[in-house]
Image (cartoon, rainbow, N blue to C red):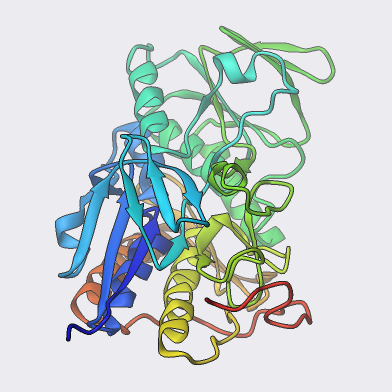
Length: 392
């Protein structure tokens, strides 16, 4: 008799999904299908480099996925929990015993800001970054560029463009780099000022026009290209599949990352909302949740109790062009401490971090189980399996 094999479909081939797929290879009786809309892995933390033309942001999956992981280049449109199939945009379906839901996140342009959806350029996906790069290539170097949103992505984009000599305005809408300590913020602000970036810390954009932005006080500033980095959204696959989500659309799970509606669906990365208290959307979160989601699946296959998720942050980092960065240290609960590293040493550390995420994927492909993650972040006190039915 042939031993029964378990088929796991991983939806999404970003940091969380690719790590989860490789980690599942700890068992040799698991068939793994990775469904991803692109034939290459996107280094999302390098998209600002793609926009500026100072670097690329894709890696061939052939170098990242271990033997036995089947890549299907397609888009999942619905998870049918009754038939245990995933419908694809091509019209095909893929059957599963378990799904790891790792669809990630995307940039969100608010409908409440007139003209933003029509004229602003988000950057959070590969195709969007390519579109923005093409638009910038059409501009004279002195044309005004406005970046809305001064988190990590917005600041990195503004810095990358300023280093090229572009005329950049960074609109913070409250505070520059809120995840950094005050000292780290001052260091980044000093670099931006030296490169000519106009930092508007408290200003808020209320309208985007084809050639200008309008502020809450009525001021109108010229903007040949407006880049929108304020806010994230998530794909609507979970809601479209009849699964419960939080207000943003992230899949609601328990503390083992299992869907509160179906024990055969496990989430990882930006699209997961454990106990309705999601982690900060970041590569750092994704690389921690990916292998833990795989471990939950492996535990269910083995008939053992899945472990509760554990995590710990170490800080955040923001590149300032190619020759400087701010590396901000943090407590494990993601609150910044006063210590940071800046300048060229910061840039070297940031590049090591970026390369390290890809190295980690390749190591997991070669040696499943090699992933590690920090622990110690606070989680809400809640039973692990609240609202989750047993696997049938």
